[in-house]
Length: 195
Image 1 (tube, rainbow, N blue to C red):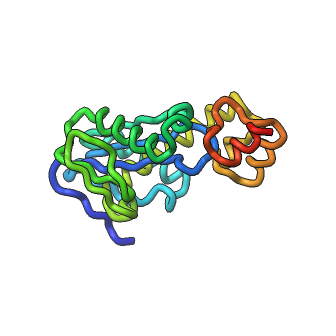
Image 2 (tube, rainbow, N blue to C red):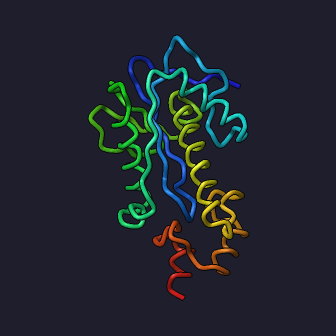
């Protein structure tokens, strides 16, 4: 596997998890890696097993110069739309860093409003080590949050699909109606709310 690029200077990588699900918050992370403490095996979180993500998340927290995780709530997603909520969560993550980054490298094609220069990189979580690290933190924190929501709303099976629109999830939605943590602005949920 080719090694990912490590940006020079105090650059933070930023990524989010949870744009596609029908329930739960969108979570973003920002990470400034330490060039003297390299982390082997960083990759786009979607290409790693849950166990590998969990192991790497611990290592990222221990070795990074700075990291922060933030979210935008279901209510914010419904009020301002998922793109704006994702950018808001990213901004909150960058603002939460203990070190002020010189620049931010954002996974995707849009940048949040930040106090430092920002560059959008499509597929950045598979190219830039710090973005990959951010993708891992965002995904592991969001998945843990969905497991916590599963304990409150077990009928939806959040432990199985983390809120994504699987056949099981859609069937549970039809049977039980939306929970307070479902995104009312998403079509499959909105259609049931109108019934």
